[in-house]
Length: 121
Image (cartoon, rainbow, N blue to C red; front, side, top):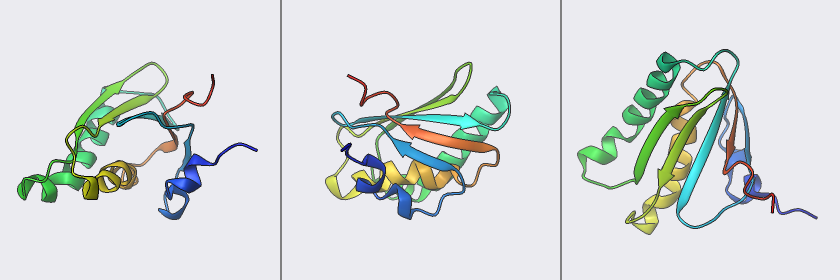
């Protein structure tokens, strides 16, 4: 029986409009593969970046570090990289779930897979 990372992380309880899955975990870094209903464009990448920035702005204003983030566009998906290095333990789940909640406000997302392919050894 395979371990269900999606349920373990509580992603199934976030009430997201898109499908969510998680393949595994390794250390303090997370890769979010964001699949869209349409084409991957720089505009969609910018929209996702803006949504994440707005979501975490209240933490930034209070000088609460929520991790290093990078958003990039690839051929078939948008990639979001999160590094939790130096994040206080009480804000780790805020960061991990916050990305998913932030992009829930972006239309056209079909699915997100966290740490895609990590469970395939």
